[in-house]
Structure formats: structure tokens, C-alpha cells
Amino acid sequence: MRMSVWLAGAALLLSATAGRCDPYYASNGIDFVVPVDELDAAAISEAAIHSGFFPVAEADPRLVAARRAADPAYEIWETRSHKIATITLTKMTRTNAFVVTYVAKDPSRKDAPLDGDACRKWLVFSSSIRLEFRNQERKYRFRAPQCTP
Image (cartoon, rainbow, N blue to C red; front, side, top):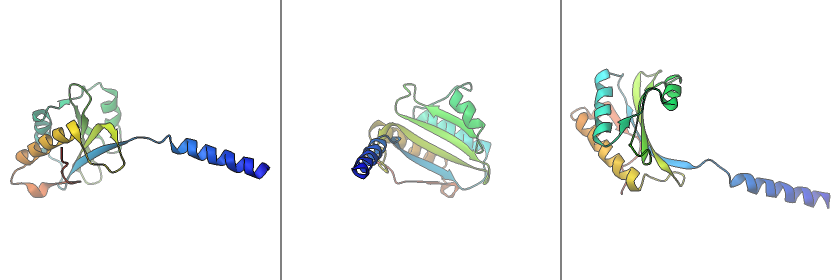
């Protein structure tokens, strides 16, 4: 009897904790395969601003904390509404190269591609990156295939 009560309690506990997991946020990214250059950072900033994203304030706690990390954030951009996605430009200390991450704000299924407004904004941003770095395709690579809005 005690064993069955214990098993029922363990099953209840496992089922309760399984339902409470962190949500997944769809994302994509761009890895630069060459050492950093201030002109590259300026071009990425122009692409972000051209696609409707604006720099986060220098005093923003997320940016301050990200700049103290082992791989410091160079800049963070968001839309004015703060609802679609966040773009983060990080300088990788080990390789001295940039990594751009684009993370949607809406939770989605695990390994789901970007969709909706986040996908549309990603397409504008990634095409702006391609324009900024035309004739320099070997300098960067996209992490995942393009999304379909």
C-alpha cells in the first residue's frame, strides 16, 4: 500500500514539473567568420535600423549585464513596440569575431522556425545584411534557413 502511494505521489510530482518548463523562442543568427572590424559593426547597425530596429539605451540593464559577460554584447536593437524580436551583436572573445542573434518575442514550439511579424522583420534584416556585405559573402554565414511568412 505504501509503495503504491509513493509511486502515485512520484508520478504526480513528475507530471507537475514536466508542465512547467521554460518557453522556447524561435531564433536565427549570423556568424561572422573573420575578426571584428568597427566598419562591420556599423554596417550591422545600419541594417538593423533600416529594418525598423532601434538601439537599446546604454543604461538598459540587459545591455549593461550583457557587456559584462565573457563574450560581451556590442549592441542590442529592438523595435519601438518591444513586441517582435531582439537583435544582439556579440563579440566572441575567443575568435574575435561577431555573432548576430535574432530572437522572436513570442514563445513557440521547440525548433520551430520564425513566423509572422518576426519572420517578416528577419527577412528585411537579413536582406539588409546581404546588401551591406555584398561582394563579401565569405565573411558571414546564416545559422538557419530563411523562414516563410
